Length: 148
Image (tube, rainbow, N blue to C red):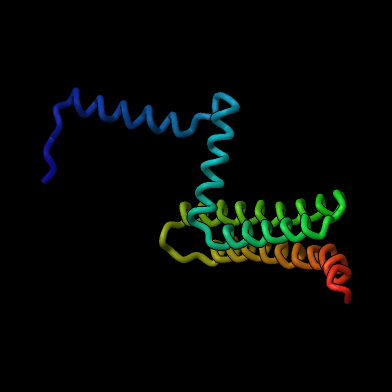
């Protein structure tokens, strides 16, 4: 049986909880705070999302190969855009999954499954497209370098 708190202590506890709740909805007051929140999102994705780490690793390998092959700036920019698109979609997929889980909890709902599956499919389509673009841009200079 829970113990009763004295009314002033209970009221103070409620006030602290209310203040914390209000702070959680506050918009970042300054630019550094906005960057800090974004960095926390990246940190969360990198530490908790295996596929995000895989995409980051593959992107780093692609850029390393592009530097070794001395691709021109336009091709490097196209690679940067495609790798970034995959990472952005992976972040959005993570956000959608979190919001759906928050909304429905541990229950099953067919619309929740559709939302999650479609978000994951968007990442898959972008990853396949990114792979094709990387092949189109990297394969010809790689074959030239290997004398094929």
